[in-house]
Image (tube, rainbow, N blue to C red; front, side, top):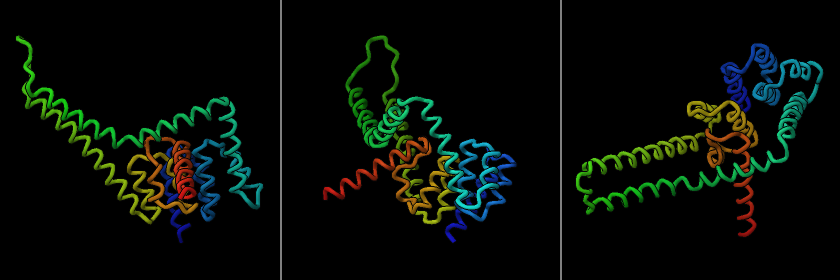
Length: 236
């Protein structure tokens, strides 16, 4: 039953994606009863694997079609990484660390803005402007600063409400629908679907997915968090 929901969700994605050609769509419809094959067809389209290569695997292989499609994708991915040089992985690791640091300090940054706003207000209480200077009413400064803080608070509150709503979803189809509404890309949604197949819950995914970072970065963060949890368990 759960696989049927995932298949239906994937089929809807396949029909709506701009990068899906008519040939790819036909291949997907012909293999729509096998979840693993259907998922690999979708990922091959995302990775821009030629329709000819995909059709050749399906026509010639009687078993493990999904495995051979996955092998084609991995071969292409490895070729791209090797072509960029050995420093690519180091750069990815540094970028992942920077993203993690930014996520960890988001709440602290908001608190700092609020603190600085209060300090600025205190600084202007007893200071008189130089003679002849163009001045702005203090009330205007207060209103502008308050409006800025309010916008930041509303933005943060909205983000927390959306994340809480997603964490409470148990139906993967509904969860995917929310992610699409919030701007997640097709590659990111495919990654979420693969995690769901592995048994990862929406609540667990919310610890590391974000529409503003790539799938590789999300996977890097997931592994880091998993490693930290295992370390904490060993120490306890």
